[in-house]
Length: 461
Ligand code: NAD
Ligand code: UGA
Image (cartoon, rainbow, N blue to C red; front, side, top):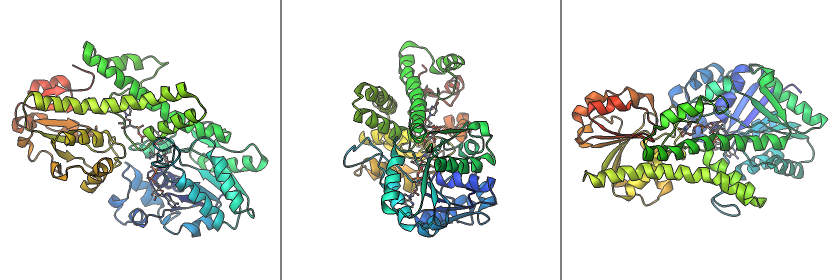
């Protein structure tokens, strides 16, 4: 079946960029991205491309090219569900906060609501594509909802998980390591797979498009994230051992990564990983393993999260210790709030947890991030602790303006601009003794120490 109209439900960090690329590469297909959040859709339609709701290098160029040609953003969910031959479900699947599986299982209420709405509105056959990250066998649930609510049309379900990383999303979409498509091993199922393969083939080499059964595709997504996060927690756990022994984690990481069997990716030590997915997907994996009685398997994967929390806490603890031991004014300048550079996304950012620990000790914080707004910082902090002391939190667009009032700088996000700061000049103005806690090891230790700063990195002494 040749696809003419695509609808994507969910105009978020995945739906927006993914559909922009699909539209750019398939000018003959109309792509309608719909969302119930009217503000978000208005932002996607905004004339000023700086106001797009997602910041991703290269995104605005693609949106500019395809928007209102064959890429459209709308709140009219029903209209475009009905119009489409293929519907992507790209809605959020957060960790459940209540009910069975609370704190672990993925909350599928948004996915299920989409399935119900599709069933209600559809008058013609459709291919439904699971783009959201979901527990293995979710497609079975979707099938059940669709068929029990609408037996007049044929629904084929595909799983097509997304592997893009924020900050590099456009490159990841343009040259993906692989595109994964899971579907049923039936004539109709295979035809549906072929339709989606054809869409991706307009720019992805066929050898990079992997087709599997539905369950393998769903499980591969969860486990890919767990493997990536596992590497970060492994290196972060060793960073603490480095601090005790005098080994340097950057040297250890390089030495390990040069083994081609291990590889060098995802071995960069940090203040802890953040982002909307690693934690939620691992919690979900742990939940699935426990629900099958696989306690040891569940404990193994949960350990990744325990180390991650420990890494964030010990970073904050070092800062608090420094203030107390040196009798410094309880005030810290935090550089970076996003969970990684080149994104405005702050979900599960280590910065939120570090800041919360500092606030619990009545330490005043000044925050600067090139892409995050003050309102987002307030939202993140109150989400974690509704009673946090607002009077201790300051947001600054020019972090260096009042630098003479600070002894301590904490780098949490690895934004390039922090590397490029004139640290010599900063040293002349900052209060002495001056401390830099580098949660990303982005600064050159020798150079910074030579300037006069006390430099405390991760896993290096
Ligand atoms: P997001 O929160 O940025 O976007 C989801 C959007 O769906 C929201 O705008 C919300 O308003 C909308 N929505 C929810 N229910 C709806 C409904 N019934 N009708 C219309 N709109 C609805 O989420 P995201 O970061 O884009 O993630 C989406 C999925 O993709 C998740 O399952 C996530 O795990 C997965 N994923 C995310 C990333 C990433 O980098 N963020 C990468 C790969 C996979
Ligand atoms: C991650 C995966 O990389 C994507 O493949 C996946 O599609 C996505 O999750 C998802 O499912 O949401 P993302 O979270 O956007 O992408 O970004 P990453 O580059 O994976 O970084 C995650 C966190 O780990 C960041 O806080 C980053 O700073 C940290 N990190 C990453 C490290 O601390 N060390 C590293 O070596 C790499």
